[in-house]
Amino acid sequence: MRVVFILMLFSYAVQAAVTPDKPPFALTIEQARDWQPDSALASEQNRSAEPLAARRFAPVPDTNARKMTPARVLFAPDGMNNFANYLEPQSAFNLYNFTQWSQIDVLNWFAGTADLNIQIPARPWVDIAHKNGVKVIGSVFLGIAKWGGSADTAEKLLEQDAEGNFIIADQLIAIARYYGFDGWLINQETDLTAVKDSNNELIEGAQDAERGRQLAAKMKAFVRYLTHHAPAGMEIHWYDAMVESGEVRWQNMLNDTNAMFLKEDGRVSDAMFINYWWDREMVLASRDKAVALGRSPYDVFMGADLWPHRNAQRAFSETSWLTALEQHEQPVTSLALFAPNFNYNFSGNAHTAAMGNFISNPDNVNAFYAAQHRLFSGDNKNLATRDTEGFVGVGAIYPAKSAIRLPLKTSFNTGHGKAWFEAGSKVDGEWTDMGRQDALPTWQFAIQGQHQLDVRFDFTKAFNGGSSLLVSGDAEQARIPLFALSGQLQPDANVTITYQSSAPVTVYLARDDGTEQQIVLPVSEAWSQYSAPVMLKPGQTFTHAGLQASDVSELSLRLGEWEIGS
Image 1 (cartoon, rainbow, N blue to C red):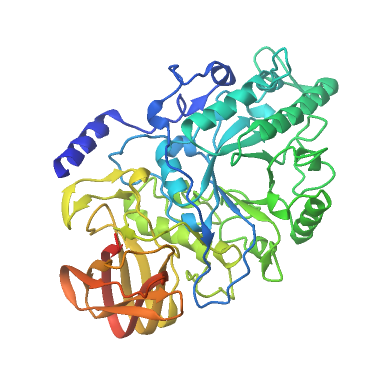
Image 2 (image 1 turned 135 degrees about the horizontal axis):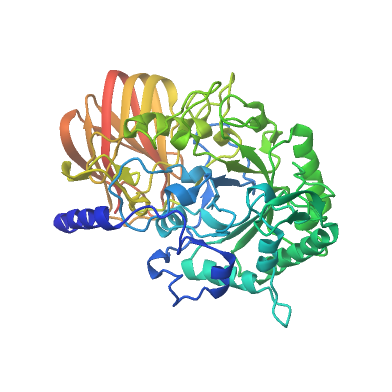
């Protein structure tokens, strides 16, 4: 197996690459019309067969747990076509990565150009999202008129056959079913009243209002058709941009001007992604409008534009927007996080320093992950306690959900590495493959008690894969919940931990009756494996598992593998 993997990496390092703007990941509308599973536009290799895992509500244990709600979080990195379109392992470490699947519900493959309107997710990302119970939706992008968008392009999208069927809508359903992803965001930002010359340049002052109204009505019918013909489980989201006149007028809330794209004489779309310039009153009004329509307020995703070059919800310097989404300790609506890749390809500007810029320097990996974790855990970087002075973190309002079932085996492999390790030994160089990401901690990270501890993924040493979990610092009494668990184990199951530690540390496994099994890991400078039998009564199970430490200073604990009954 070791030799096979090394050869695979060598081969793919030569042959494979991120492919931003071509099939199978990106299609023109004409190509989408012609697309067939057996055509050159399709790729068998991009098909995901990974079923969508079931999830359950998983707030951090022993906290003031919120009530379960249907509120959801959509995650839309800006430009997935530019840094995630690959099908094979890549020979670079610093490609885009994401680990906090428990904190999101939908991954939107946010991408597109004025010509390449249909953007299709890459299989490795669909596979790992589905393993974590997260849906993945592609993008249909119609660009802003001054940047190449055209009413002519929209007209091609809206073509109907003699029976009135929307040809491209049927193709979008077929494409999503073939590749195994979960729907589409319709991101229609073209002013359909705009008039252009033969070079696709705007004619200033010219407007075709009648054409705009006609195309807008047809667009609404297209979305309704797509929503109603999509199979169960597939979702169609509409972005708050175009209004019934065909003009682009972002409403920044759900109101009478855009509500018909969510519901009008029945369901038009499954959800609406609201533009970014809103305040608390607009959030509450959006909730009330959804309820008045007979729709769930959680079908409304208030958009948060995190990109630091802009101002609406600029990452970590604009913070009040998040608490505006909360009332009576519950989320008011769902949330759409746009451009959370600020930790990857933002290089800094006059008012905001770079928060990783991992794309430019692989040595910035710790800053890359720190910014991702801060987005969900807040300025105090701790999901177990709500930050009271600054940014509270998405996880404070939208708690985690878990798809992890027993038995569990993980090497804390995040899906990339500075090297590939097997049994603690480095066998090859840097790599990325999201499809190889392991089950990772549900809570990244939560630390309870009196401590000065840091928990992070580490890429200098691993047991199997590219990373380990490193816990370092001082603790009087600390508890670190890691995994939310469910499912039954065989009576002869074992718990096996592979680790290095400078001090004794306890692994705890919480049972569903409130009791715990505790396993003390002795000091070990080298990789060591400690195994103990699972202690459960018939019918009992574990609900979560983690670590605890007391009276330790300068702790250095590295977890290489964690196995419960596997």
